[in-house]
Length: 299
Image (cartoon, rainbow, N blue to C red; front, side):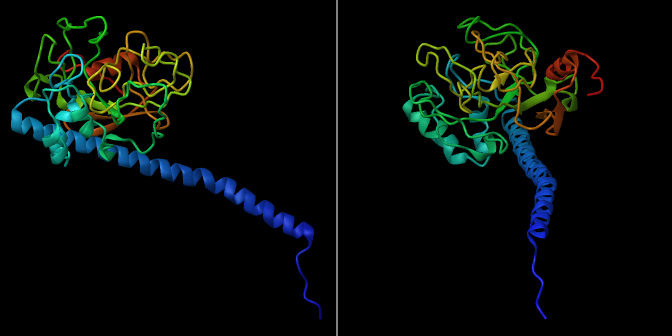
């Protein structure tokens, strides 16, 4: 008795079935991986929230957006290093020097996993651009409020206008903030949000990097308004395409992420929430202020 084998038609049917199963399962696998990455990102934000609370317990105030110099001092994220289990890096950092100083680049050039979102692709360096100075990228920024301002362009070297966020710049009219200043409620005020930087269509036009695509000033150790101090005044969660203008001649950036549909934030109370990209702009601005007295609607 002869054993019957697969016919060509049967083999093709089996291959087709396997292909269909893979096509059905692959999106589910990808969604599961993104869910895991988003959870890891959420844990990063929770860790930053806890670190900020511990900083406040120690110094009775929040760290500022800039630790020292108006142009290139350390950032909020530099200030909380000691509370992010990065005590050696904190001890090595010299807050009297710029973040781009070769001495400090030994610290600011370190990739700190807690400052990197797993969903964000690795940055793309451009050899013709020398302004990055070896500093490492980051994927998070503090919310300085809803005010349309620019420290490093319009107000270069001058006192800043009133900044209405939980975290402020040293030169603002309110130079320090703490829990006492969050009268809108700590559970209703943004503190840290996501920043994404992989912009394939964007052409940076500074003198040292004219016409080159780069991840720009998104360094965790840099206090620039394109790096670690954002407002909600500009487009929320814009995508990577030409014309979005999330970087412009005034060096301004928006909260955005690589997660589908929105961005995650740490609120002042330390809780982490996903804020959908469909949120009303007025509601987002309300969440950005520390003492505006607004009523937060549904979001």
